[in-house]
Amino acid sequence: MPAYNEDPPHFGPEEHMDSASTARYLDGAEQHELFANVIVSESDNGLRFDVPPRIVLAPSVGKFVLTAYGARRWFKERDDYGEIRTWQSLTDPSEGGQIWIPHLYPFEEVDEKGLPVIKDVERCKLTIELQGYGHAGQEVPPLEVSVHTDDDVLTASENEASYNPFGEYYFIDFSSINRSVHAEVVEYPEIIYHTLGDYLDDKGMSADYFDIMTRKKDIPEEFTRQFVPNDWNARKSSTFLSSATGEIYVPMHMLATGIEAGISFPAFQPNKS
Image: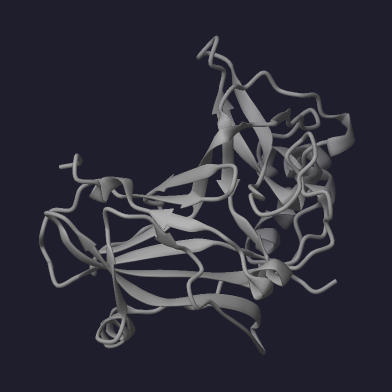
């Protein structure tokens, strides 16, 4: 199966401004079709989709250019259908660990663990972007976007990876309103050597340290294996309580035939400052 494709390049500020001159205007206080006029294409970089830019009119804030896009993601292992996250116990903050949580599949049937029933499907990860348009330097309230499906609402705040010299805001990590998380405790082998230096000293290989740091030699697999999670089959359900959260994946065959989904902007509602 092919390796993962990287996320495709997105519109930069100049391309946004060029596109904005012909983009359709949307009332930021209303809900709109998410995949309006979506374009599905394939190139040397792989399968992807793009929703043509639209301008969102936000009361008391100004204008934002809205785009949505995604690049094909191939799933190879069971764990690729979710993400390992660091957490703290809700009952005892001194306790922590890692849990595995499925991604979100709101457009297709899922099993009792939140995984898609049919796994061998081409999907693209949904990224929604808002870019400030015509109000440089103006203070912008904390932004959110909500995706509406037939049986759920999924909301995302501005992603931590957003970089805003041009007022670009990305929305990738969504939380479900109607679905609960199905988390599993991730366990690791016993860590005997906390640092590479400890391992090499114990094995009488201290002289190899420089060659490993300069990539002339590989890091010994015996050392790196300590930091690889135990097989997922041995995991137990977690007592972590939350709404389902993760990246939204869109089945490409459904997108090509039409997916009913809406988008709204909680921060642009009339009762929001």
